[in-house]
Amino acid sequence: MVYDLLITHIKGLVQVRDQPVNKLMGREMSQLPILQDAYLIISKGLIHSYGFMKDIPLDVKAQTVLNASDQFVFPSFVDSHTHLVFAATREEEFVMKLKGASYEQIAASGGGILNSAKKLQALSEEELFQSSLPRAWEIIQSGTGAVEIKSGYGLTTKDELKMLRVAQRIGRETPLTVKTTFLGAHAVPREKTKEQYITEIINEMIPAVAEEKLAEYIDAFCETGFFSVEETERIFEAGKIAGLIPRLHANQLNRSGGVQVGVKTGAISVDHLENMGEEEIEVLKNSGTMPVALPGAAFFLNLPFTPARSIIDAGLPIAVASDYNPGSAPSGNMPLMLSLACIKMRMTPEEAINATTINTAYTLNLSKTHGTITRGKVANVFITQPISSIASLPYSFGSNLISQIILNGKLIK
Image (cartoon, one colour):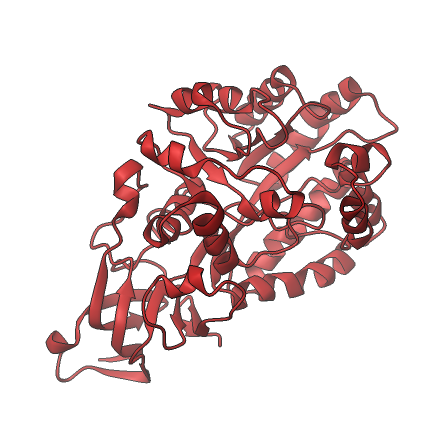
C-alpha cells in the first residue's frame, strides 16, 4: 500500500498518546510524551501510525515524503475561544486605551461590542464572509487546526444568524475544523431594555439558532454592566432546553459570580478568569467545567493574568485559547499565547502545550479526534523549523517557527 504522506527522521514527535486523552489535570499537565527520531504515516486524512525510525517498516511507501531532521512535529493547536467573524478592526479604541480609557468607559461611549455590532449589521452575509475569511487562513498559518467561533456582534436575530452561517461556511471552505457558539448575550442594544433583549434572546434567537442547527454551544458575557448571574442562568437554561451546551465569559473584569453559575449550569468551560480567588477554585473542583485562560486579552487590556499556577496546583485542569477579536485581543496567534502562558502565567512549556491541545479539545468535544498524535485521529499537525527543543516555541515569542502545516492529511504550507 502507498500511503498519502510519510514524515521521517522527526527530531521529536510531540504529544504522542496511544489512547485518546479526555483532559489533563494538576500534575498531569507537566507530562508531555515525545518520541525522538520518529516517523509519522498519514493516510486518508487520518494518523495511520508512528514509531521510532529504527522500527519503520522497510517497505513503507508514500506519495509525499518529508524529512523532518532536526525538526519537531506537533499536533495542531485547538483554539477554543474566538470571535473570528467580525466586520472591522477597532484601532481607534486602541488609541483611547493608550490615553487611559478603561474597557467600561469605551463601552459607555458607544465603543466596544456595540461599535462592532453597528459595523457588522451594515454588511451582507457574503461581505462578512469575505471579510472574515483571511483571518481563518491567518490562524491556519500560525498552527491552528480546530477553532471555536462565536456570534455576538449581531445583537439582532437576523445578524446573529448571519454570523453563525458565516462561521459554519468557514468550516466548509477552509481546512479548519470549526465549532460554533451562539453569544447573543454579549451586550444590550441601545434601543432595547435589558429585559426586552433577554426576552428576544430566549423567545426568538435561541429557537432560530436551534432550528437551523447553527450552533452547538451557548455563551454569555457574565460581567458587571452586562449580564448578571441570574440573567445568565435564565439564558443558559433556555439554551439547554434547545440542545445548546453552555460555555461562559466569566470573571474578566471582576469576580462576577460567573464561575459559580457556569458550574451550576453545567458549562463545559468558563473563560477569561483574570479575577479568581480561592472560592472560584473550590467551586471548579469535582466539576466537569474547564477553566480557560485567554492571555492575549489580559495582555492587550493590561489586566491581571489568569492565576494558572494556583489553578494547576489545586489539581485542576486549565486550557489556553486566543480570544481573537477586534476589541480586546486582536491576535489569533496561538504560539504567542504559548509564550504569554509561560512568561506571564508561569506555566511550563509542557503545561502550555497540553493546555492548547488536549484541554482545549475537551471544551469543544473534540477529544476523540483532535489534540494529540494518536492512531485514527484527524491528521492535523505542523512541522517546526529546525529548533533545539519544545521550549523554543514559547521562548522565541514573535518568531515564526512553523515550517509546514498539514490539515486533514493534506499539506497546506
